[in-house]
Amino acid sequence: MAALTLMHISQGLRRAGKWSLDWLIPPQCLVCRGDIAEASGLCVTCWSKLSFIEAPFCEKLATPFPYDQGEEMVSAAALADPPPWDRARSALLFDDTARILVHALKYHDRHEAGLLMARLMVRAGADILKSADAIIPVPLYRWRLWRRRYNQSALLARKICRDTDKTFRPELLRRLRSTRSQTGLDHEERRRNVRNAFIVPKQSRASVAGKSLVLIDDVRTTGATLEACARALKAAGAAHVDVLTFALVPKPKQLHI
Image (tube, rainbow, N blue to C red):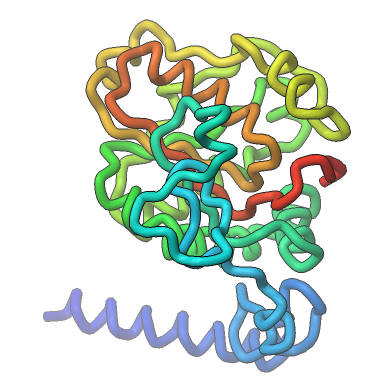
């Protein structure tokens, strides 16, 4: 009974502390920096600018269809160049508003942006997350991780796991070598850049074989990096590999993200 009372007191103090902090420093919109009611959110105006990807969309690429073509329909692009993964989901189309959120997390250490991004990813990927045995972030090479101090894909994956009670398994996929920045490269250049750059470590292959896995990344541009990751997991025996990103670039020729 005493322990329960202490827990209630502790929760009350945390709520009071948060209220006091919000009163002294009001939470700001993650995009326009205007005052809002709660942290890790957007104002009404910026929220209305988000380009959500809703059904109907391609089962393989998550690209929106102009009209409903039936369940599990696949686009002409996916038929012409099938991806190595099974299903793809993205929360938003990559536009100016989504760019600000991605850059806030990736380059400006604003982890509160990651909270919002992860919540939207859980919503967009509910069906593929439900059947997942484990969630794997796209790994960074160790020197790039050292320079950035954290992997934004891993941060998103960890938050998604907390919200869905799924298993976070970053050790199942390793980046073998450093690759040049993908910015400015076309699709084929990106594919060559990351070819054979990822591997499932020998000690992790038993944990991959026969499993349904979800790969997490912040943005899917051409999909070259996720393709390389999915191929490595499939080569190690994964039964299903799905991909979930926060944003999808609608016109991959516009590669300066």
